[in-house]
Image 1 (cartoon, helix red, strand yellow):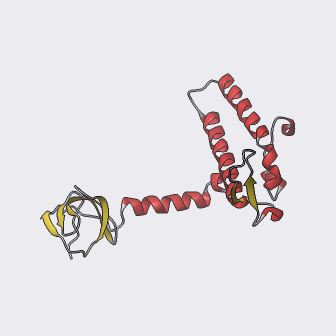
Image 2 (tube, helix red, strand yellow):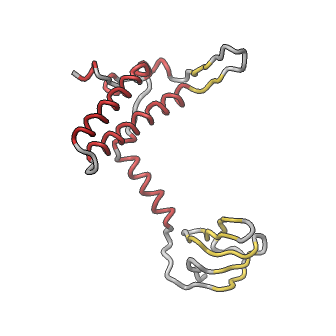
Length: 175
């Protein structure tokens, strides 16, 4: 079986005419005129209108990107594993409005994960500010003070963390 290159034009019995926009080890990613983006098996039945015979690597950009994201998540500081305090495991967060409408509930682990993601994103922003070539030292100090205040506003959520080293620390705790 000869693999079509990106840019090949095909006519599929179900989806109609389309252009191959990506190739993975198992599928063609084809953008069809009427159906949009679809993936079809490499050995699917279709008519080749115009085949492009570029050399195609059996690993697609999507596969490479997915692998890279997994590696970065594993080794990056921004996705460290943070433990929720044992007493909250399996619990739920309940928001009860005063107007008689229905409560909003969610697993506390979901809420905790969102708090940790906020913290991680603040840390990334802090790193970008500190390494910025476009900000002068005074601007960096001013922005760092805002970040410290943001951490201080989030200290109420420290009760959720299992270890104290994961806590948010505001201005008073910095000394």
